[in-house]
Amino acid sequence: MKILILGAGKMGSFFADVLSFDHDVAVFDTDPKRLRFVYNVVRMSNPAEIKDFDPEIVINAATVKYTIDAFEMVLPYLDASCIISDIASVKTGLKEYYEKSGHPYASSHPMFGPTFANLSDLSTQSAIVISESNHWGKIFFKDLYKSLGLKVFDYSFEEHDETIAYSLSIPFASTLVFASVMKHQEAPGTTFKRHMEIAKGLLSEDDFLLTEILFNPHSPSQIEGIRKELKSLLEIIEKKDSKEMLNFLTKVRGNIADKSN
Image 1 (cartoon, rainbow, N blue to C red):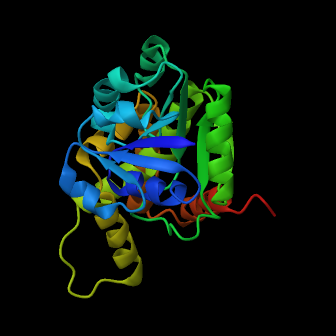
Image 2: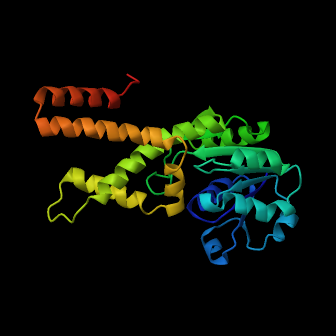
Image 3: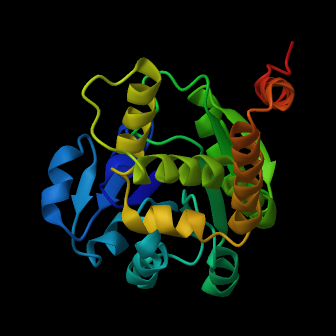
C-alpha cells in the first residue's frame, strides 16, 4: 500500500519506521530539516510532490494544533478515493471536518507516546479506532495496532473524548498541580523523584497538546472529582481523624486494585 505520513515528528517518524518495511511510504514535512531523521521512505517538503506519489491512505501525524491545517495543505493533491486519517489524541472538530472533506476517512488514537512508552515493546499499551471510520481504514489500523501487540478498542468520536477526559485529563491535572507547588529538594525521597520524572516528561510535551486535552469538554467534570477528593483528604488531615484516614486509604486501594484477578 502507498502511505503518506504528514509530519516527521516523534509519532510520524515512529509510524514511518514501522510501516516502511511492508509498504511504500512517503513522509511530508514543511521543514526539510526534520526529514533528516526518517529513513527508508520518500521524503517530501513540497506538497506538489504528493500528486505523483498518489497515496492510498494519508496518516496525519502533525501536532494537534495543525492537524486540520495539514489536511488542507495536501487535500488538493489527493485522489478522491484516498483515505485520510489522523492519530490525534484530541478529536475536537475532526468528525465535522471529515464529513465535509469528500474523502473516506479513518480516525484512531494510539494510547501511548514516545515520552513514556517503550516503543520496542508495546504489549501493555492500547489503541482506539473510531467506529465511524471507513471500513477499510478501520481494518488497516486494527491490523497495524494488533501487529504491534496493542489492545484495540472501538469507540465513537464522543466515546473517545469521554475516555480521554478520564485517562489523560486526570493524570495531567494531578501532575501539573504537583509540579506547580514544587520546590528544590536537597534530599528528595524515592516517591518525590518518581513524581518529578513524570512531571518533567509531561512538560516536555507540546503546550498546545496539553491545553487541548485539558480543554476537552468532558475534562471539567473529571477534574472536579479531584477537587472534591482533595477537599475531603484535607479535612481528614486537619482533623487528624485516623478512622476516616483508614477509610479513605481503603477506598483508594480498592480503586487501584487489579480487577482482572
